[in-house]
Image 1 (tube, rainbow, N blue to C red):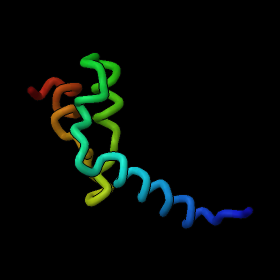
Image 2 (cartoon, rainbow, N blue to C red; image 1 turned 60 degrees about the vertical axis):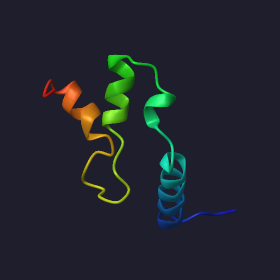
Image 3 (cartoon, rainbow, N blue to C red; image 1 turned 180 degrees about the vertical axis):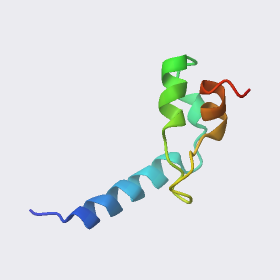
Amino acid sequence: MEFSLSSIQTLVKDIEEEMFLNIDPYSFVSPSAYDTAWLAMVRDPQEPGQPMFRGCLDWVLGRV
């Protein structure tokens, strides 16, 4: 079975959207700086150039 790059990207996008739909991301991540930094790197599927969890990014950068 062979996949093209665009089909893989589409699958990843679909999985990301499904994973975070109706889920509070803070309910499954421990409250540590390391985990908060990882959440800060998740891109918003609706706005790919923006973080999905802006509050996490602001916290990591010391803006809160």
